[in-house]
Image (cartoon, rainbow, N blue to C red; front, side):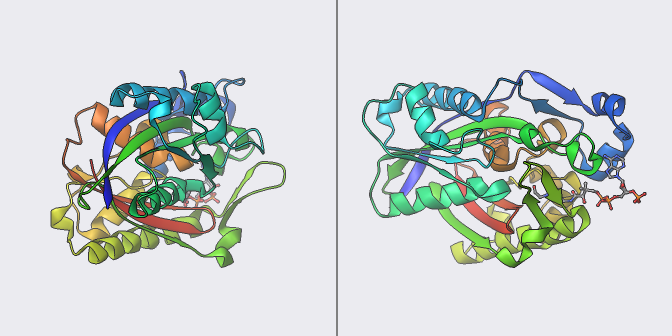
Length: 312
Ligand code: UT7
């Protein structure tokens, strides 16, 4: 038993923060940021704009795209690590915002930058068990909550935003969420984690070294598991943390750069929203077309990493 993608939507806050804007407030340059990360700009949520606000708009757009209402959805899974409230979950708050009346379940997955792959993993399992007809998956983050403008090594790297995907149960195992793999290594906690005062602690170079091997490893693992090779894949959407990591991963996989979806230049790293936003962007702009096979590797704090195989 499988699924198919029947709707998508996204939301990016209005405020765009460029590299030049950072030059004015800290000791950095556009040249450094572009050379080291490939980022040119990122979106910053307004001070009173919450993760739930962004998630609800993206979810509403995905429902409109699918021609559905929230009561047509049987379960909501949200990938987020930046919710302002400890409880209830962003998922439940989105149900409330959208006026759901069916008491359908909703919950959040805290998988940091790998969160949307963990959420896809959950959705695939629920479809495989035949438990739900339609699942909405949201990735939503307000990373600016964690930014320390005295730390130039992390402040320039992140952005805010939300994306939503709606999958419907299908008897075909070859569409929608075809396969997923998720992994974690808690021994590597020190490399990248949140601090008690809500900041980001990251050893950039060490994280970089892990990312350039673990994402291609996860991609290779899932291709082997599905019995396919890179030549069968139409697009790779890697987690958008750094253009150099994306390019290095593509090289390791022997995959042409023209077939890699890149949004890190405009969205920067939106953590658990990254891949969902990138897929929405690629579909909206006609880059990815219906029926194409997408390989989705991600990596993040934990360490956590994984990959998904999706036919849109
Ligand atoms: O999504 C979760 C996963 N996260 C990641 O995948 C991030 C992985 N890491 C990276 O992407 C890169 O390590 C960074 C982009 C974070 C940093 O790039 P790097 O090439 O590894 O630079 P570095 O940390 O080795 O720093 C090189 C220099 C240092 O100066 P010195 O000590 O050589 O004089 C830094 O102080 O660059 C300096 N630097 C900056 N300079 C200007 C660090 N941040 C900045 C900045 N502007 N914003």
